[in-house]
Length: 246
View 1 (cartoon, one colour):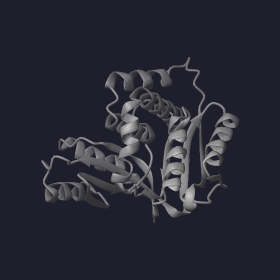
View 2 (cartoon, rainbow, N blue to C red):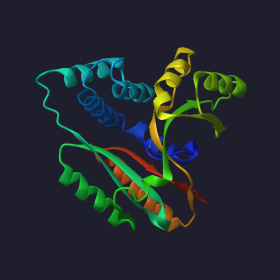
View 3 (cartoon, rainbow, N blue to C red):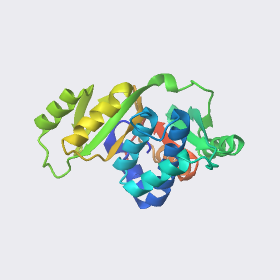
View 4 (cartoon, rainbow, N blue to C red):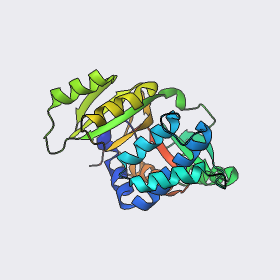
């Protein structure tokens, strides 16, 4: 999922993800496979990375059968999937910071494709650490309240009691932040209280934002995001742009 942290700024990318649900499930399945292999277990109670990947899958409405089959496939002795996790950092229009997280079986291919996506629309690929210093790693849980059925004080109290770091309501959604190591306990506690999530994962949350108002900058930024998200190897794209279209 792209963006963070202002949910109203990434509704566009969520809508695009919904329209390409099969691709979203494929990407999450790859994340589950890597989590099983890196964590050394197909049991989420013994593998926090897998538990986090399952939470992300559930928030994306990935069927439980799909999740189970993917774990079994990754745990099997005959599994041939060989993905590695790679991260790229760079700049978009007006110096917007962009982080691209990928899982690939061909490092050379994804490096070339990411570089091309930056270059094609006025961005540039940077070095490791060039923008990640301006992001904080956080657990992010998003709860829909567009219809106003949830009481703000109740959600706030439930989230804080579960161990959330902070919470805000904006444009009909609650956005709950946790420390990375508290993400699973907070999401599990809220799920047990009956809350459903629009998103639930460990994200890179920007410390500051750059507002784009020029139509050409907005067009180029949107193109960069679209190209990254359409790439099968790209799992997540984080950026610090706020797009203000007239």
